Image 1 (spheres, rainbow, N blue to C red):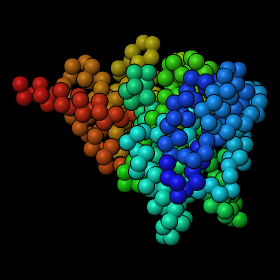
Image 2 (image 1 turned 180 degrees about the vertical axis):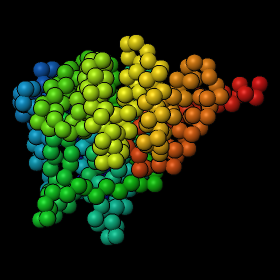
Image 3 (image 1 turned 90 degrees about the vertical axis):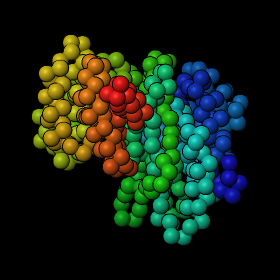
Image 4 (image 1 turned 120 degrees about the vertical axis):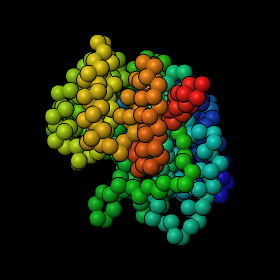
Length: 358
């Protein structure tokens, strides 16, 4: 905790009695004040948060009309006027221990630096974790979690699902100016684990919200992909694959409008070829298409390399994963979410390098 700064940790929650202690313990290492908005818990979330020192507010929000943006805007209005920084992580997200000291230093430095007055937020890297703790995907350039507060800035969220944060200015709403620091600020996300999805029922709610978004914006490729992702989280893998497959022509027509979104959809289409009946031919066809349309992304070489590793095709696995690693390092902080897992890639590269030298 930095006593020279007023740092407030915010969260919205519903039925999170088991995750709140971990989240509160984590943000307490940084924040002076912790504020939680409960949106209608049936469990002991309110009591748990209050007992652990959080300031708790309640707003019962019906599931059939729930909006993440509305909930986040409600809790934004609760912050004290003298707040310097906000920590606005989800209760299933934890700021990595190795990033806490550096984050506190950066908050203090940027607050004092006149040359950095136009910085609204600090970029973070999200590591989505599996049930066993391994990394599932890594996401950069996500919605800001570390937000700077100034009197002349009014922030607000839009969007029922995967909400976006904006700065309301005299010239209209503009995205936050986010600074990427030399050393990444890591946040570990546990909300996509099987245990978390079954316990909270969030996957069902996400399907409902995403389906509503598609109905409202049927031509939006982003809404279509968010719907497919929600179906996958809910275990409806074949339905998710059908949604993406039906949108493939639209994807190809719009690929240059949002290359990051296109990479995500193509990556998930490749993974979908091994849901139910395995389809190697279609997987390779998608790989060839992806590598030609989006050659800078590491995901496609990585997925193909992992498949070759499973099939004991050592030379191919080694070559593909080396290529994926080079692309990942070249893109650096430009890349958004990626399936590329550096630890797994290095393990496979090392394995086949050693076998080659035997």
